[in-house]
Image 1 (tube, helix red, strand yellow):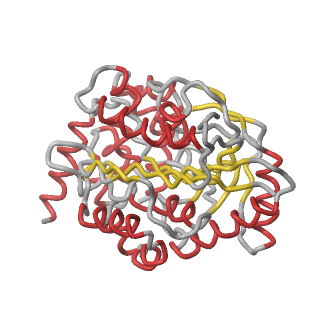
Image 2 (spheres, one colour):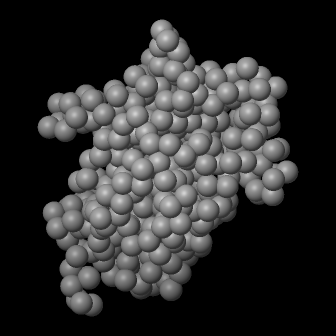
Length: 281
Length: 95
C-alpha cells in the first residue's frame, strides 16, 4: 500500500514568484516561508503529491463541478499569469484514476479531467516548492468560488476517502499532500482594502484558523468553517476547503510549524509524518 | 440583465489576447467586440462595460473577481487602481 508521509499547506499568491525574483520588500520573507515548507517536503521524500486546489474560473466556467480530479498524463501552466514561468507537470494518472474509482465507490461524485491546463494555484507554489524537480501530482479540484459549494464536513470526508484510496493502492509509493489556498481574502470585491483591489475582510478568522491548526483540532475547524463564515471571510476564502480536505487525509495533530502573513490572510504550514533520516528526495 | 454574459466576457479577457486587443482598440472596435459576445450583453451592460463601470456592474450582481480582470489586464482604460476606486465609489453610493 502507498504511504502518506506528510501534509503541507501554502498560499498561491500569483505575484509571489515575481516578488521573490525582483527584490520586492516581502521577497525574502516569502522565500523563507516557502523554503521552510520545501525543506520539510524534501525530508519526507515523496514519490507522488496529492494536490488540493480551487480553480479560479480558468478551467471551469460553463460547467462547474463541485469536486474533480485530473487523470491526464501531464498538464502545463499557468494559464492565467504569463509572469510565472510556464512548465509542464507530470500527473500520476494511474493513481489518480484509482483515487477517482475509490471516491466514487464511497459516493463522492468526483469528476474527471482528461485534459487540462493548470492555473497559478498550482504553478506558483511549485515555483518555490519544486523549483527543479518534477514529482507526479494527483490534482484534486474543489469548487470554492461559485456558490453553492461543498460543506467543510463534505470536504473533510472527501479527504478521508482519498486517504483510503491511497492506503489501498497497490503501490509502495510515498505520498505527500499539498493544499493551496488562503483563509480570508477578497479579490476585487467590495471588502477590499482602502488602497488596493484586494482585502482581508476577516483577520480574526485567519487567527482562529491558525489557532485551531496549532491545536490540531481539525474537527472543530470543520464545524466552524460554515458557508456563512467562509463567505464573511471573503470571496476567495473558501479556499480553506482545500486545506480541510488535506487535513481529512491525516490524523489530527499540531503541525511542525505555521507561519502566517496576516496582511494576506494566509499561512504556510507543515505536518511531516514520515521524514527520512537523510532527508533525500 | 444577464450577469452570466458579463462574467463570461470578463473571463475571456484572461484567456483571449485578441479580445484584449479589441477592447484596447478604438471605442467602436471595443464596442463591436463586446456586442459580438455570446450570450449577448444587454444594452445597459454593453455601456457599463465600455465605460469600465465595474462598481455598478458589481452592484447589479456581476462577479467582482471576474470584473477585476478588466483592471488586471488593463483593457477598456481600466487599471487595478481604478477598479478599487470604482468599487468603493459604488459602495459609497448605496451606503
